Length: 304
Image (cartoon, rainbow, N blue to C red; front, side, top):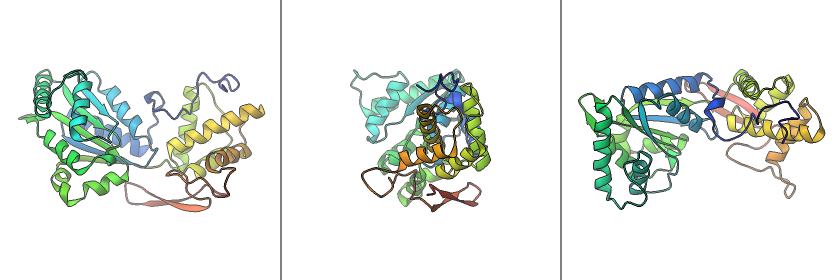
């Protein structure tokens, strides 16, 4: 809609995960490298943790893209099911079963084992990537641990990646999952973007879409403050700002437009209270953004 007005080839701030727009700040770069290494070296169970909107799904898809020639993937993103249903989804994605087939859980497990052994003989890997893993119940998590027992002398034959929000960490520390906790070979954290990373992120996406210089320095500062460095929130703010600018026929986004975009996303005409979501705290509140190194960065987000 607004792409031609700004001279863009496509919408640069779509909220859909797209590895084409992959931007790798420090924590994301380290996590992707660890993920690729862990799958290649058959490290077994791995965990990726990040807040809502920090780019976990994009990271998983980037890993799949890098390893597509050597690894067969099952990417599970619907986790509000029990383990037998998820095992069926895994088998269907790996093409060792189909929805029309009625196969027992034990038979599916056996087929997966045979398939992983066959792939290993060809020096190929098998990996199960589980998005939104914080939704998994304790029994399902324990069953995935048992699934990770498929191995040979050379290492684990099925690599399992749990990707989820911080609640996943809390769940994994439960005493009932102590055996699973001990099996985690790699654990990485996705931190919110810093001020400079936010600027780089926006510039990176605009460059890919064929644009530059649309947002002023003041705009970039406000976007970082309002978003708390969360990529999905940055995308939503920028996309709404471009739409508002298009409606006003302004090719340069101003601070006023960013504030209007923020208000459109966080305020309702039917109530005096701001719309509260997991990504948008109350105006003027301080958010403590914990970094993987233990440093806590405080940002004033959604200012009046």
